[in-house]
Amino acid sequence: MDKIVLEGGTQLRGEVELSGAKNAALPILSATILSDSTSVIHRVPNLQDIRTMVTILESLGAVVDWDKDQGTIQVDPKNINKEEAPYELVKKMRASICFLGPLIGRLGKARVSMPGGCVIGPRPVDLHLKGLECLNVKISIEQGYICAETEELRGNEIFLGGRFGSSVLATANVMMAAVRAKGLTIIESAACEPEIENLAHFLMKMGADIEGAGTHVIKIRGVDSLHGAEHTVIPDRIEAGTFMIAAAMTRGDVLIKGVDMAMLHGVNDKLAQAGVKLERKDGNVRVTVPNDLSVVDVITLPYPGFPTDLQAQMMGLMSVTNGISVITEKIYPERFMHVAELNRMAASISLEGQSAIVKGVKHLNGAPVMASDLRASAALVLAGLVADGSTEVHRVYHIDRGYENIEEKLSKLGAKIQRVKE
Image (cartoon, rainbow, N blue to C red; front, side, top):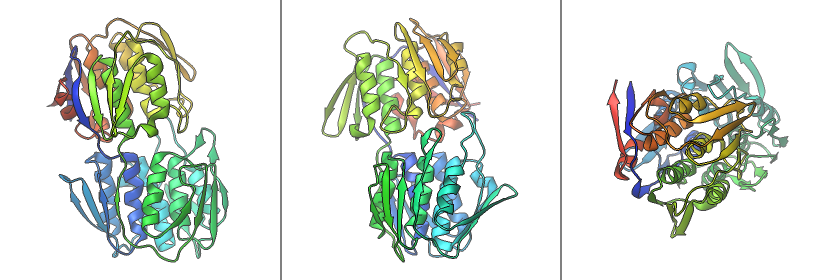
């Protein structure tokens, strides 16, 4: 098992290129099985979650050719004849649930292991099942597996609003099944994240008929067949936000290349309120801090609000900003495992229900800390960039799920960071 070791106190300076978005690539790769011919997907990040997705594709019978240097994956699905995504693979990655819709769309049946909970709280699959049942799919739970079967997928009107808003993966699953359903499907309260829009663009290249992706109402007219297509994954907006916050925390000067700032309105707004300067030019953004930063209150919300996947990193920034801020988690109320670890580094954070009260301190202190989930691990790395002394971040397999070569990218920006075998 690896750990990341950092020496704090260096301002980040230079340029960084974004990778493709993991949360867009995963459902797109699962959608390739809806076709009988080869699809080519570009800008796929080399991450643990992508490796798990490739293993599942191969277990179903697909032939996968992955050029990791070029970031290109070719998927030939013509020999897919298995409907089961087994527990030993699904348990590694919650997003494996997005095979449910494509398997039903291709084979008329699916057997996918129930994904477990995680340290940021359980994330139920009720909206996935509700949406598929509306498409004439019979579903049962047997020995920890979702067993789904249909004689014919039929379009329908489906409401996918949930307790904490729309579900991205449920929207993706229903959309991927509905493209093969008879008639018209209308998804109300659909997730409108850019990753859903990117998936829809890929499906349309394959021959699907979809309107409204990127809004809360998506209309899908089913088609008889789909063909392979070539597609490029969008840049990772969460990685972009993470580097923007890293530049702000270190009071650095960083040019982030290939960022779509239209995907980051909620983040841009809060960083600008805090005093971070964002200069946009030709698809790039330069991040600097010309004056002292100010504290801001943050509430995580579904897109286009402030993303829950940047809550921990923003808390790291507020922990070294003078004043008191309140960060409220509306998507995953239990997503505060990083608070105790930041406090080990001399942050001053207390929890009150769904909110964290952050009192900014002048300095964080380096310490050994434990990553509990993907985004918490990123927050701890960012904290280590500004902490006095040495910080060791353990369990970095979490960060490898969602950040491609993060220590190399930070090192090129001047960070004193290295990966060490434990």
